[in-house]
Image 1: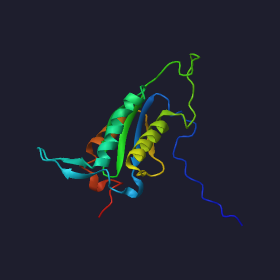
Image 2 (image 1 turned 30 degrees about the horizontal axis):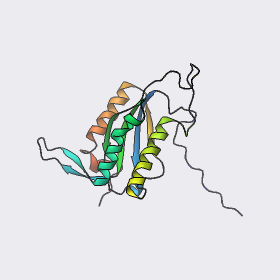
Image 3 (image 1 turned 30 degrees about the vertical axis):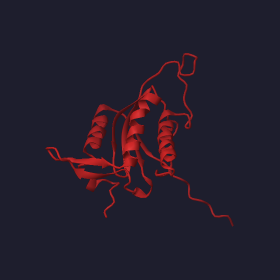
Length: 173
C-alpha cells in the first residue's frame, strides 16, 4: 500500500497575478532559523536603539536587495530590514502598460510573476555566492491592500530590531 504524502498548504492567493501593480510585504527566512545574517546589538549613538550588525552573509544579502530595483525596472524595494535569521521587504510593483505587446495587460503565470521571480533571484544569487543554500524552501508574502496596512508594515520593519526578543523568528538561546 502506497503511503500518501500530506498535501502542502497553499500560501499564495489562488488566481492572483503576482506581477500586478501593488504593494507586497515579503518575508524570507533562513533555514532552521539559523542566525547567520547578523546580530541585534544596542547602537553606540544616542538614543542607543537596537540595530542589526550584519555578518558578511548579511552584508551580501543587503547588497542584493539594493540591486532589485535596477534588475527589475517595474519594482521598488520601498523598505527592508535584514534581521539575524530573516529579511522583510516592502516591495512596490509599478504599473506597466502594454506588457504583452497588444495594448492589454497580460497576466503572468506563477513562475513568471515578479514577486516569485525576485525571491528566487535573491535566493539563487546568495546560494551561488555562499556555495550553499541558507534559505528555507518557501517565503511569506502579504498583499498590502490599503494605506493603514502599509503604515503598519513600515513601522513593523522599522521596529523589528527593537522588538527582536518578541519576534516570531527569534530563537531563545
